[in-house]
Image (cartoon, rainbow, N blue to C red):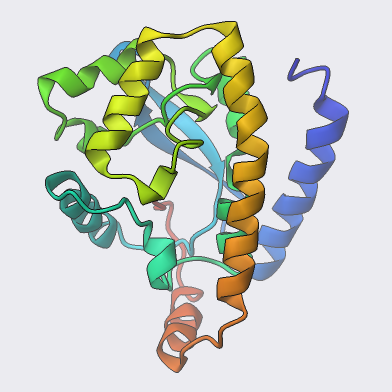
Amino acid sequence: MILITLPLWLPLMIAIGFIIRMTSNGPVLFQQERVGYRGKKFRCIKFRTMFCSAEPVSHQNHLQQLVSSDAPMTKMDALGDARIVPMGRFLRAAGLDELPQLINVLKGEMSLVGPRPCLPYEAEKYLPWQWERFNAAPGLTGLWQISGKNRTTFKRMMELDIEYAKNQSLLLDLKIIFKTIPVLLSQIVEIRQKTKKASSPAVTAGTVMTQRQCTNTQLT
């Protein structure tokens, strides 16, 4: 299926790569270690949507707060993350930053549908029952993504991932893929409404500063 649709998504990937190259310094793609099926680690490929100098500590602290609380899993993007490149928020909201993960699917490391691939330091915080989510291969979309996503809590995400792992089927996958489209469209509308608001001077200044350096670190 992926190879058949190659003429559709390859030109789009080339266009996205061009935009990233023109709007920020650094590589178009980045690879990051993630935890996949049965806890096996692999290199996840994504479009780079953050400045190369983005530090990881703030994301780790944010994740720790989400894991230990019962608060909705609001992404740092929504809080005005100055680490994100121009057009980065749109690419992330539309799920376009994850298109290179089709390579991971072709390599058998991911599936089109499944739990999102988590970071190793996130997996280290899981309780024993939460490791059941690894009984399914990680996917580009999943039950959590169409069931509220960042409006749900960390515990609820785990419950949805485990529910999918226990009830995997072609019919369920098709249902999730079908429902993913309107979810992505609503996220795009939401991000467009937010971007209409004027950017604060502090965020603008932070963006200019981060463009001056480039390493190979990025977070989701």
